[in-house]
Image (cartoon, rainbow, N blue to C red):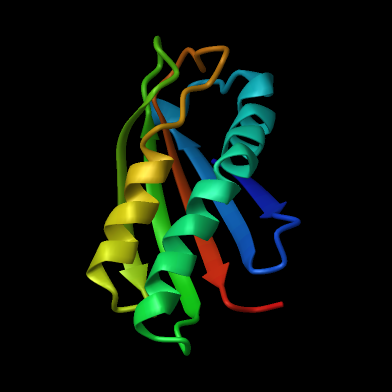
Length: 124
């Protein structure tokens, strides 16, 4: 199992991640960096999700645990879900999962990958 820590330079969003591959297979060395880059590319979408939630309640802040399953041959996220959240806004959780579901790695990992990330919203 591989572990990775990520920091988004957003000011409102930190992510910590852990990658696991099926059957202990060897992970493409580029995969970790590609996932970091893909999540960073989505930070604008995550920020939009957060800003929409703030319109309902200016006090929203907290962590959101995100699970990503990445297809071994296509590099596409096949499943993105919020598995735990301090923020109880259903629309925001759907928005964040939808934004994460748009991720596609430029180089397929070669093995099924499951990534776990914690996004922190509202902490500067």
